[in-house]
Length: 99
Figure 1 (tube, helix red, strand yellow):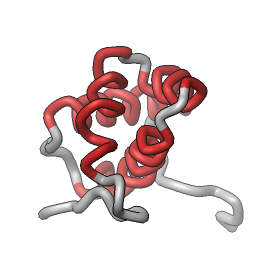
Figure 2 (tube, rainbow, N blue to C red):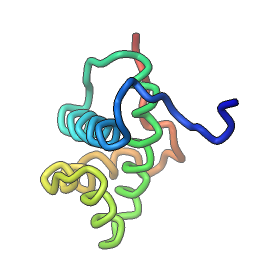
Figure 3 (tube, one colour):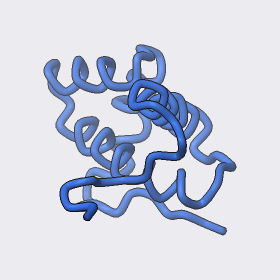
Figure 4 (cartoon, rainbow, N blue to C red):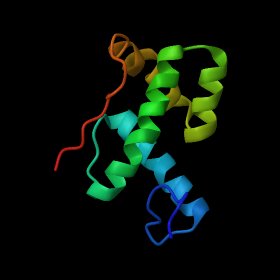
């Protein structure tokens, strides 16, 4: 049974999956759109939406959490400066997967 197992494995180790999603999140926040497979996009969506929610919060602790998760300070500044204010009045649903 698969109780308690959330997300797909993509035939990768845990550390590889974590770094893969961090890299995908950096690319998505930097370019605002990426081309990837649909299962990866579906698993990336909650990760980036949580980052945008942290960006809307905007305090120092949220900045440190974002940088710790994605590992890129420049993209973190872009998230807090340009992307998060765009969604200030929206309560979630910041991303859309297009086939």
